[in-house]
Structure formats: C-alpha cells, structure tokens
Image 1 (cartoon, rainbow, N blue to C red):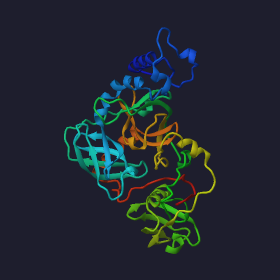
Image 2: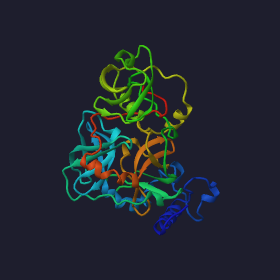
Image 3: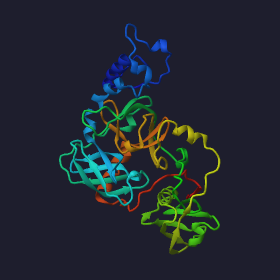
Image 4: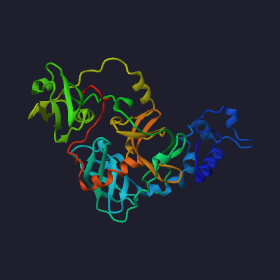
Amino acid sequence: MKTNGVGRKWLAVAVTLLGVSLAGALPASAQRVPGRRTAPEDKTTGFRENPRLLAVFKNVVAGPGKSVVRVRSDDKDVALGTVVAADGYVLTKNSELLPGARPTVVLRDGRKLDAKVTGVDLKHDLAMLKIDAKNLVPVQWGESRSAAVGDLLAAPGPDADAEPVAVGVLSVAARAVRPRDLPPSTPPANSGYLGVMLEEAEGGARIVMVTPRSAAANAGLRERDVVTLIAGTPIIDAETMINTIQHHRPGEAVTIKVRRGEKEVEVEATLDKRPPETGFDRRDYQNKLGSALSNRRGGFPQVLQHDMAIRPMDCGGPVVDLDGKAIGVNIARAGRVESYALPAEAVQALIEELKNGKLAVRTESPGTTKPAGTQAAK
C-alpha cells in the first residue's frame, strides 16, 4: 500500500489502535497486538465502521470538512455539496435534487440558505449551486492521477469536529469507462414507461424499436427518430433519455422533440405504467444487501472506484487522501463494496462553465439509469 509520510503515520496509528488489517485478510492471531486487550467495538464492528478508526481520521478530514455542506431539497437531506469558490459556489450531485423544489444549503455554522442552480452537466451528474454567502472555504484539489490502488481515503462530512462519513481504500484508479462497464440500476417501480429501444446517435438518442400499443407508439414516435429534448431536458445520449423518462411518473404527459430525417418534430406522450420486471437479478440483490444504492450510478465518462460505504445522501462531497486533498467528488454508491467518484481533474475542468451557465441549466432532475448500448427507456 502506497502512502506518503503523513499517510504512513496515520496508518501506523490506526493499525496500532485496532490491531487489525484494513482488508481483514490476516488471521485473528496475526491481528492481535501482544499486551493489548481487545476493545468490545473491535468485536462488533467492521474495520471501516470502527469508531476508534474513524476518530483517528478526524485530523485528516478536519481541513477539507470546512469545504463540505449539506444539500437539502423539499426539506429532506439529499446530498452533500463541495464548496469550490469562496463567494458561494457549491458542487453537488444533480440527480438527487428533487424536481420542482428549490434546493437549500446548510452551512457548518447552521445557516440555511436558498440556492440557485446555475448549471448542470448531465454526463457527470453534477449541478452547480449558488448561495448568497461570502468567505467560504473552497476545497483544496489534489491529483487523482497520483493516487494508487490501495491508498487510504476518507470522505469528510459537513459537521464541525465530526468524524469522516466513511473511510476506505482506492480500489481502481481513475479511468475512462463505457456505460456498460458500470453496474446497471433497477428502475423504480413507480417510474414512467415510454416503450422504446435506444442506441447512441449524434446529438441525442436514436429509437431502434417502438413497442406496439406503448406510450411511444400512441404518441407517433418512429424507428430512426433521434430524440433531442424531453420535458425541457436536453437529451445528449441514450443514458440521459433513460434518466429523464424514469424520473417521470405513469400518467404524466411529456413533450418530446425528435429529429426525423431533415425535420424537427414535436409530440406529446402520456407515459405508461412500468411492466413488471421478469427474472431474478442476483447481482443487484447482492449489491443491495445492507446498503441503499444511488438511483443514478452509471453512465459517467470517467470514475475512480473505492470501497467506502457512502450513503446516496452523502454523494456530492469530496473524497480526500491522507493529506486532506480532494482527489475527486463522490458521485454514486454502486454496490455493496463499490462506490464511484469523479476524478478531480474532470471536475475542475467543468467548474467555470457550470458557474457561468454555459452548460445546461436543469429543468427536470434525471432519476435512474440503465446500461447503455441498445437500451430500453423504461
């Protein structure tokens, strides 16, 4: 496991305190420290949930925690936010923001401030919020490229003097991914159903099959139509279209713009009730054991993967190394031992455009995802 000087010090302290290996791979006899009585919590908690380990990491997250806020929507905690500018700009996870509800940001000092969405990047599932605040502490960025598999990581929370919300190790270094490389999501049972199969197309999502007597068929959608806009949300690929459709409910009417040959066509589709899923997805069942998963957990252009048990409502905050530098932003809890973060370099490249509104301003919040390729917008 690669660590810098600070990392070696904290790792030594953690292992001395707990007398266990991070991966839990050592036998019990090898994990015991001679002359030290085993604490009760060491017997009843996993390594990453052990309160004494989390206490060790308090110093690691003390600095970056000043750049973390809680994001709320419709009076519910929905995500964390990462402060990226002292004058009130905060990054968060876009798909957790509830449609029709203005987000609010809760600062460390307890202030609750209304937030305005200035820009959205649908591919990375990021939204930029602007609040009326000054002298905030922007996050200090590190380099995801310098992080190696096995490095210790932590996720700071929004509360002063608090332990990290999670700790773990880097599982897979930052990499570009194809949507089918990431685990599929199970669509919500109460989400809308259009009834088409999709493939990627230039400037949208191309319909390759229309289910007979479906909402799509009733609206007059055709094979080869390229969908470019749904209910005010720009459709940039098949993943975005699926996210958008699944966010709406059965019975809702949505306006859909398509490119049909040389013409632009607009139709209105009343979404159907989702047909029951068939079969038993063993992987999805196992992934959900003991944890809630993010609704949107696929379709990101690039990610780094770690094993921190991040709750969906704690996505949007930074993931930091042992120097307290943010090497990424947590973006999805994808499985029992899989969480994804957007690499710091990719996030930094989007900040200015998100601040000045050059990227799409959200009108509807995408919800869940399915793997790309040829896909059903269910």
